[in-house]
Length: 104
Picture: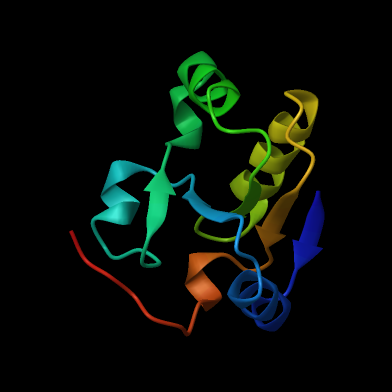
């Protein structure tokens, strides 16, 4: 796991052909907008979150974000424990995101 600033996250993501963006916020938070092309798995699902993450392709590189960067950091720790070697936490989360935003 690595904590990346938004600039580092965006630059690294742009050059990563094996990348998956993972949004771990709640449904209500996602309803307020999300980073385009992100996959959503709510961190607060508990064991179901762990199960869904465990089903992910472990060979991919995961760029993970939440509202402020705390849940996504914890999600990256769980991903590490499940054998996902490359996870990147967005410091500051969606609150500090100034890139493109999509809506449902």
